[in-house]
Length: 230
Image 1 (cartoon, rainbow, N blue to C red):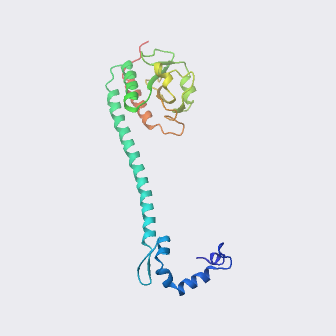
Image 2: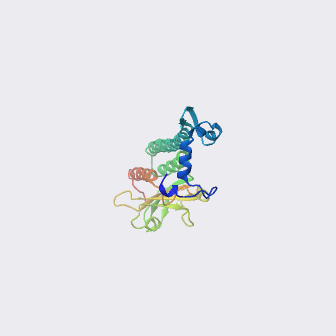
Image 3: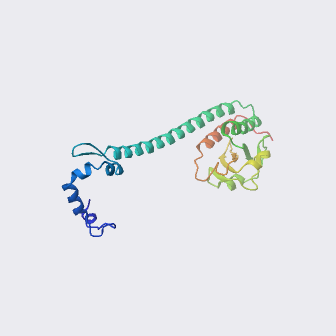
């Protein structure tokens, strides 16, 4: 105990200082070691003459540490399992997208994967005019992609908003969205993939978008297999 602490008088005994208490305990150690009731209250026990075991107090601290570490390990394991499951579902979705026969089938498969594989409300592919827009894709006015994700932006995540209207009959279920820019064909036409979640916190600005960006890149490469017919 520091000197500053030793000089502080106790509230219960204003005239009693720690050095005096310590000296008295040292001089009367037998009274402490034989007072089992007091030792139990302090979380201590005796194992022999003039020996005081601190095992119970140390064990309590050790158990607390183990419980805290076990909780952290369980959280890490849960995150790892969730990531592995998401990766597995992504791989299956990609294989399904690669089976697409045309642009319309590609849009249908993307929407089906969003629902079945990731628990989303839906997914859509949108393409700017002028020019033909495949059946099943959403048509956007010129400049709309820049307006949605920013002139230099690659993605936008956040709450759904009025006027987006990319999810058809599922629009009322969508609470948050992820919009990922893509530019298929050469010369490129501005386009995007839209993913809609039924949860308000399904997509947030602070969230990473690696998974949906990866799916968008797959859609982009698949779309380039076929020409756009006007």
